[in-house]
Length: 446
Image (cartoon, rainbow, N blue to C red; front, side, top):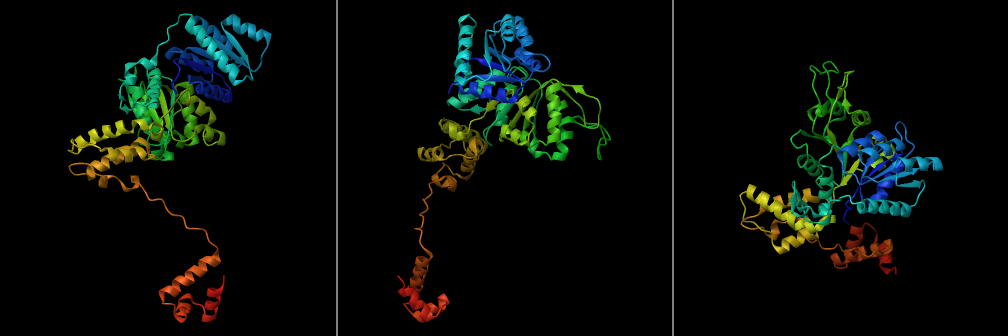
């Protein structure tokens, strides 16, 4: 699956509609930015290259008509599609007069959305606007990009997404299994982008005790709590101007989630124990291996925070989804750790590589890295099959016993005991703890 060249901005204050549009457009291979207000939408428009705007009309505060008027003058080349749950002739005319090219009334079908979007994209391309073919970018064809190793379609698409967001401050949510390189993606976004000279601060929310996370993130003033003997800034202040990476964001307690929401909404933080707020300008990248959408529906993660974080969604593929990259990754780790441990001559034989290709890698790239490192440490002048961890090697299928009745199992055991004592019924009865008469009856039973 290759992403379309175009970026689509969706604006709707209804989170369910925002998610529905995102999923439908994602199924069509479009890359989307999401905003739940006009103010958020304008920020994204200023910092990103947008090829199509899809906006609701009725929203609290600044409405969709105002957004269309703004885009018509500031970004005249962007086609605009209006969606609304309150269709009327007047609203349709107002939208068209303001610059909208098309109009969809809720509810609409997936096919209607697909047809309308494709027509508007085609209209934009036909009008002469230049659309850069990101897939032709030379960096995508290389085997490594900012430490991300691979040549599979999944990695090419991942690098494509990074290249689209690296030069702006749009909030990014990275989702993927443990060991798929979510922090590596976050670092690539920062250090390959326009703000690479600014701070990058990584915070593992799951590794910090809940009662300390708030003060660690936002800082605290002297006397805010027992032990606060001085005023100290937090990670947000340290990352000001650059990027803060919040790993395992799903573990953040609800009271910290409330504070994070304020940072995203107001672009300001206040220290624990302080009534004053200070403005900050930074990019927030969050990561999780949990399903935040499901957590928000269950009330364990704030729904409004989920949508604020999920402006741009990046999914890191599992290693089993991109097995094509296993050989390249294994050789990369072999070169790295071979030099580190003074064994640069080591190679992986075809037989060992076949074992690596066969494994399902539940621990993903991190597991593969650990396996290669272990084999190098355990090896002599060359890596042999004995150096491969046992759990990776072929396991003999377990032969399942035929299911028998309790009576059959009992009789088989009695015959086994009789055979062990040379058919001495007295001795067998003693071992089985039954009398000879009972033993004889059980032997004769069919």
